[in-house]
Length: 136
Length: 400
Image (cartoon, rainbow over all chains, first blue to last red; front, side):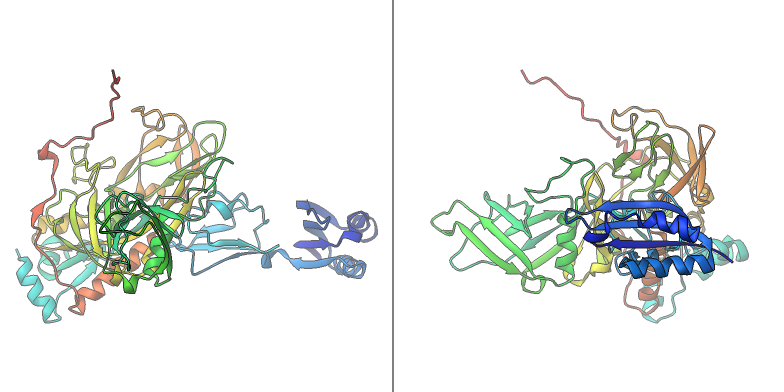
């Protein structure tokens, strides 16, 4: 069975210079798409990937990552909406490049589908009540 | 034909029939105008969106020894407040920013905290840091004060907004090749999106387009409490072209509103940040329309399909005050999620919250049904097209 998942990987300083993603491709035949990559001044790495492949190989790949010491988090946990701040105006809808926001038919409430979110951050400053939050 | 006094009597007895400007559309479709006008007493409206001409004046009470803010400088949570009044009256405008805010030095600026946020926190019951410097007089010797204030301890805290509730507004687009950051939100290049800002069929002044019932002195829902219409708003421009139904095809009427901040709620007065533009306040406002005649009722049956707005380019046309528009579009079209501009399919988004406008109209409906809110006769009408009021530009003159 094929899977496609978006994950946030955190690399500690000692892992930053190792060719970890290469191993995912070579050993587990996973296809990757880099959505965001960043190295902080403390030289810790953050990588947001879309990983595609066979479920079995995907699981093995994730196991490999964990074994090497990479921290893994599902992307959906990283960008969240503060529901008490959101006023459902809709300013975010056309700003989002992946269409993660939509309007509920009838009520016109703004829905956020974090499965579609790639954590680009475009919505964060574009939201007038600043309801969108990133937790990296 | 009914009078406001008769409707108020029904409200007091808990018998008034109140519906929202959304609900009335189907009621009239079903029952016809004549029957519906007999049965329905009040139609409620609502809107919730950023309204930059908003602010509050407060009277802090006198310190011991006394200090006179007037002629000095005052800050609320580092936001400058206007002090050009008597000793301890100050006015905080919602777009005011801290002196050290980077503004647009790194474009687009974030404008995380401004006067609107202070108002939200003040209404929410949070302590606010007041810092003032003064020049000192014989009767007001102090030159400095730093203290916390709370809305509960203030003599007065009054929301007084010179311009709210715009009757219709532009649809903003960007014809240039780079992203622009405007008061109409982030506009993507080459007609990447179109932003609008009106509650459309629920919007107060679009349901009484010729100001037959809404006037000076009208009691309204303001910021989660009650308020009043104080005057026509600034830039009130009733003489614009209108549809057959009387609905302005461009931004037209506006309202100046006032109300006791102490009974309002932070939920309905929200400090907001427009990226690259500034800080402002999202205001919740709703107005009841008494159904005094079939004609007045007919105006309230306006639908999103009946209201059109001009499409304006904010990269070149708006900044340079050019008259051109890129055509007209109805709110029904805007609400489908895309419109067509210059042959291109452009996705749309709103800056005004329709779900919140619905809640406001429903809340006002409930207040009236419960007998907590009665209607008012306008003290004076808002100026209509016959007033000859026009929207003037600032024509610069050389100073010799």
